[in-house]
Image 1 (cartoon, rainbow, N blue to C red):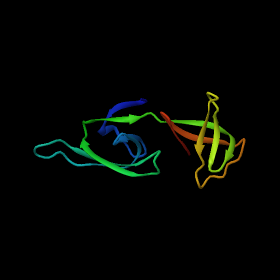
Image 2: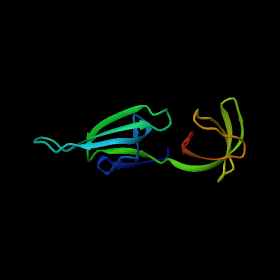
Image 3: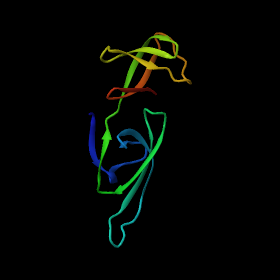
Image 4: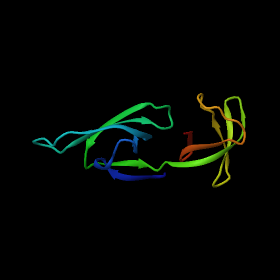
Length: 125
């Protein structure tokens, strides 16, 4: 898997983090002061990157380790479109694959798109 480990205190809004084994983008990050019998805690809220923005959160000590997915941003060219799907060619590796066309996107053949990729998951930006 393409991921690395980091401490919770190093996370920031807008970064990626694995929440419930799902790549998510951090939408809110807050910390509490250390108490009399414990360490400082951080509350992290995020939205899923590849599952339609489903909300998730977790609370951990700031020195706990969490996984951060390595999500790459790539360029692709639309080869063809048909019935809500499109064939896309990665402009770096020349690999072709099928992606769902987002509702708000109007694409045709030979258009260049930008997409996010993590393992076998892809999403048009």
